[in-house]
Image 1 (cartoon, helix red, strand yellow):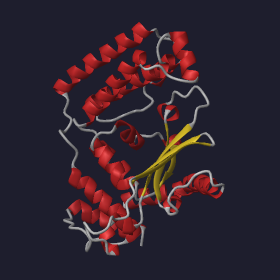
Image 2: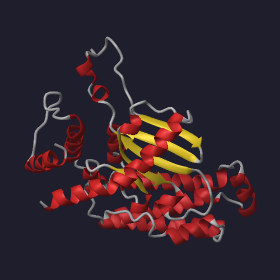
Image 3: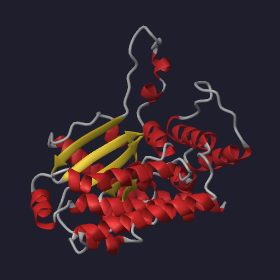
Length: 306
């Protein structure tokens, strides 16, 4: 009963958030400034502000990054229900929609299946969405809360090389990639790219948190990241800090208790629960083997979305 009350509270709480992001999308569509699929604004499951605001280190008026997750129409998820035959015609598909520099907004909205696939693979940008602070959450359905409640499931040993690899790529670019625009002025002033430097250290800190806590507090080290973005550390100090973090990561790898990989069956069942919350039973469309936990979730679902 407690789970039901929590879910209902979340649903009511998000009525305002839902209006906020959906109103923005519909206003931009009406003004012909964006052109997503016509069903997208009514099929959003989740949206959050990404980028420097998410990390708690925004210091300028750069574009506001918005990441989202949507549930495509049932015919897109299961094209065989519309008569599609493999090898005869191409099925209707949708993986993601993105559009940049629209009234200072950058949009990237994923099909939930792609979002979960990327999260299972440890994709850093997608994983960060799951750990967004409340003030960065623009929209969240009660059904998607099932995924947020299970976000630790996505932090495994598969995550570590993805975060560390992304960190190393940013470290390499600090001196080798010459930026453009305002960042070029900063590059010429400080002798290195402050944005790449801040990403390097931020990703290293996240990798440490994953190994030690199986959690990510996106803003835990925000003050240090701000200092780097403001040019308060020399290039040598940034490089030394990066190497120190990398050494700590190697030590933590030896003692970590992280599971080797995510429980894909559990995540698949959550995906099925979400689809059924919106489109009804899909038992006749795919093979489903329900565990006891899945049956309990189904009971809660029947109360919330009947």
